[in-house]
Structures are given as C-alpha cells and as structure tokens.
Length: 218
Image (cartoon, rainbow, N blue to C red):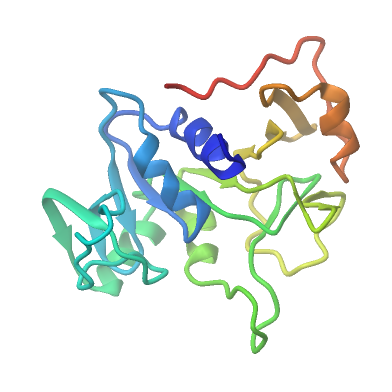
C-alpha cells in the first residue's frame, strides 16, 4: 500500500454516517474511495456541489463535473449543484461536520499552514481559510516529511491558514492529536515505531505510555 492510500484509508475511519464532509484538493480527495462499508456521508466541494462521488473510472469522466482543483468527480443520485455564494454560506455558516485538508506545515500549537507566497508557482490558499475557520472538525491529511524536512514543526515558517487549532493530523507515519497541552501521538503506522516518529518530527510530541498501531480498515 502506498503512503497516500494509507493516509486516505485512515482518515476515512474518522467519518460518520450522515456527515457533511469537504475534501480538499489533492490527497484528501482519495478519502471518498475508502469509506468503510455501510458509512454513507455527503461530500461537498467548495466550487458548488453536495453529493460528490469518487473519481469515475478512466473514460467515464464528465468534464462538466469537477472538484475545486479541476479534477473530474462523480455525483451520487440526488446530488445538488449551486453557486459559490451558497457553497461558502455552508462553509462559513458552520454547517460542515468535517473538512479534510492537505498541509505544508503544522506547528506545536496545532496551527496549519497549507499555502505559500501569492504570485509564485506554488499552492495558493483557495478556500482553506474559510474551511479551517468554519468546519466543526478539521483533519489534516499529509505526508510526514517533504524533501527530507519534517512538516510537523515547532513554529510554521509559512503563512498560517488560520489561528485555529486543527483537530487531527494523519500522516504516513502517525496519527497526532493537537491539544491544549501540545501534540499527542495517538497511533503509529504499521511497521513504524515511536522512535521512528520522534526522529522524523520537528516538533515536541507528548507520548502516552501505550501507543497503538494505526487501524486502516479493509
């Protein structure tokens, strides 16, 4: 199993039947394909759809249906499409149960940075500021390190997406819960030790006496 699939499968276990869920661009969109059996949620994309389905098989794409990143999506029967004003009304009005976002950095206070400098050929903020501020629960799905550098840091060097503390971080190495006391190591990925996680993390972690293996579902 590749790292991104591992992360997506673990995040999918956090979703509950009936949740209204926003999936950010990139890795988070993979979560839709890994829901546990019997768990039906409503996926929302900020460009204006509730009822988003996993990416269709090759050749079955309808290019009139896309997510906020422009990638093709499916739609479940009864899906609703609407304009950006309605979409961001859902987000800013606190109606989203969960948002799953990628991240560039998360710091010891659980603050997310997932955009870089405007005007450069690098990721922009998109709707992330509204999503982090408006969703009831924020899950960051990202690889633990990039180019040999930890993405979980003492203090974000990149612009903060929001000052709000995110609720959960799921990486290819661990599940980490930001709390008022600090970052708590909740689980380690299969075959990964606590020592491995500590060595790959640029921030201090609170390590409980027992740290279970990460469940990843079927």
